[in-house]
Length: 225
Image 1 (cartoon, helix red, strand yellow):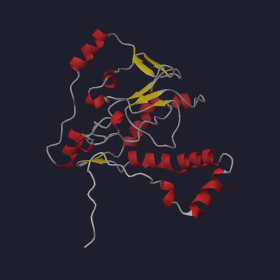
Image 2 (cartoon, helix red, strand yellow; image 1 turned 180 degrees about the vertical axis):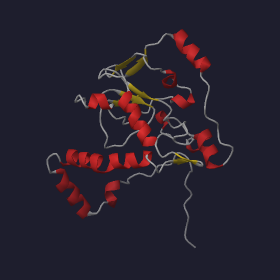
Image 3 (cartoon, rainbow, N blue to C red; image 1 turned 135 degrees about the vertical axis):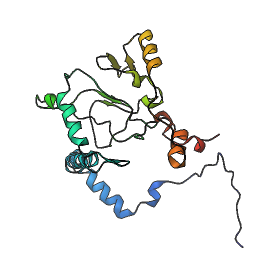
Image 4 (cartoon, rainbow, N blue to C red; image 1 turned 90 degrees about the horizontal axis):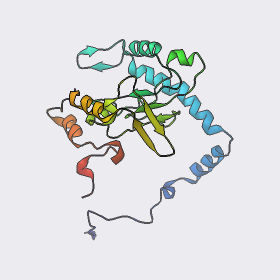
């Protein structure tokens, strides 16, 4: 019979363990050689973005999207039409709501909002985009993600309407919706949640236990007590 060691369940940390201990010497050498190549990281990110991620995004939003018994075959075309008709200028801010962890979408990689067609045709490469979603590590731009609390859980992001002014300050690390408190209270009172908690199964567990992006989108019951 092998001897056993009882360890405390909570608050115990294993020390002296490093991920590098599990790296093969050949892998370390290959990684060092690749890092020594100038601009390789930037080139690979662009190749992955244009050669894989954009095609993947189109495929996901295309005819393969299915909800229940309905086949949404024109989702991507509707998406393109919407962006082609947006009346925006480079100084405007694009806002995406209800894509956070508490929404039925469960925080998809949707934060990399494309530049509207009319601006892209004018050579605009970037503009401010704000959402409660996430995005791929190879995406880039002036983008604010993981807004918390998210729109689906009643956060201020859900009260934003077209035409509102938003102040974004990197220096003070703040985002301010420039709408008076009375109007915000009016909007909040009129807002009705369009989401219902599922009756059972993993979907119900997720809806009741998922935490916000500021807490890592973990489950409540997994947090230390």
